[in-house]
Amino acid sequence: QVQLVESGGGLVQAGGSLRLSCAASGRAFSSRGLGWFRQAPGKEREFVASISWSGTSTVYADSVKGRFTISRDNGENTVSLQMNNLKPEDTAVYYCAAQRLLYGLASTQKSGYDYWGQGTQVTVSS
Image 1 (cartoon, rainbow, N blue to C red):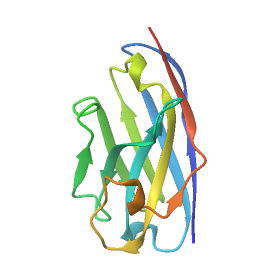
Image 2 (image 1 turned 30 degrees about the horizontal axis):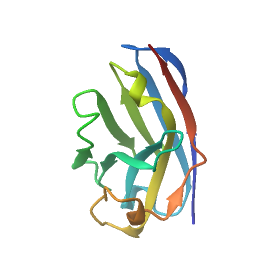
Image 3 (image 1 turned 180 degrees about the horizontal axis):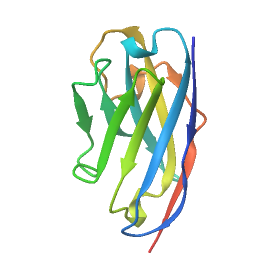
């Protein structure tokens, strides 16, 4: 079992930056692929970024590529999402997620993740 707790959300003006963090507890954190997803009001939860268990492979949604950076610290059991040049359309609840499968490729699909945090709100004003 893995527990995930996000932090770092808030209100920021367009063009600003935020850094989200997700602290994990439980078994084998360093062996699991991790992802960030977001859900805006009235919309489906969508993929934002993922990172492999080793940290050597990352994938980004086209909408955030070049602006967001995912990273992990296996010593601290954390995964972070640095968000720069934020836009109003980035407004959503952001969730971190972890895979049950060990040493797998991190997925871009919601179904590829078994553990989810409670989410943190990010609001970008224009």
